[in-house]
Length: 341
Image (cartoon, rainbow, N blue to C red):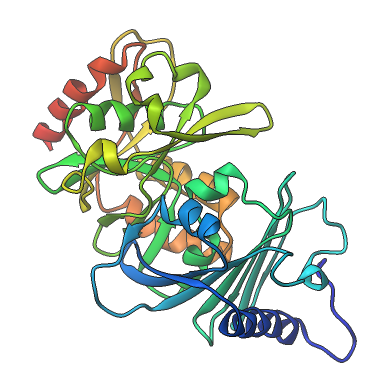
């Protein structure tokens, strides 16, 4: 497993106790509670100070009433010490799954520990380095949501989604293939926008909902999108993949963040086209594109994730797309496809 424990303590007891200690500390200390919407569910986000509150809330939608199904605490070593739960080798990523708990350790120059207690509907994000890395602030606590939805038809998916009139195109596949470029080009052209990096999908019905108000723009695409770089909240560097971490709330306004029904799955791939091109893909191609990237980034039993995404891949036609070298040509090409479906 790789996580610390002792002979008299089971792993589940160790992890659930850590969550209990974190929420006990928050009950005794000053705290800020933020009701936020996370795809189809409401979440009670609890932070220890205003700085964390501003950083985390900037990527969330505010909750609009209703039940808050999950509570998530964001803490640092200045608040509570959880190093006893960190893996024995902190340089290596680790995951743990059981019916009771899910734990993810994400090594980084600013490492992050995620713990979900399923029975308590409570999770903890522990920023072991004292600060949140920029990628975490763009998709806050995403492993907790993905795991929380494990026993439902919904799933957090590593994809972008844009659309019109309640019908969405889901862009899935490996990084640097053009998902963000296509999503931002369509958003700039007035399309509805459901996300650039992660969205939430009902894998039975094909309903897509936004998760975050963020976008992650590759540094080499800064020129074509210079008009939105003022929305930059920071820059991340993942093994040389430099990204501008954007917050689009003010840029798009409240009426452009919309979910909708899946109309097609697009699999971007760069093959040197000048203008956008597409060819039909198979359900297997769509499943591979959805599964590989989601599985790499998100925890969960492989068979459960594969079964969900296989259902989703069968709900709509799939196409390989080369988005071309001119982002301004993407909306019209995507619009033509959407009108044909």
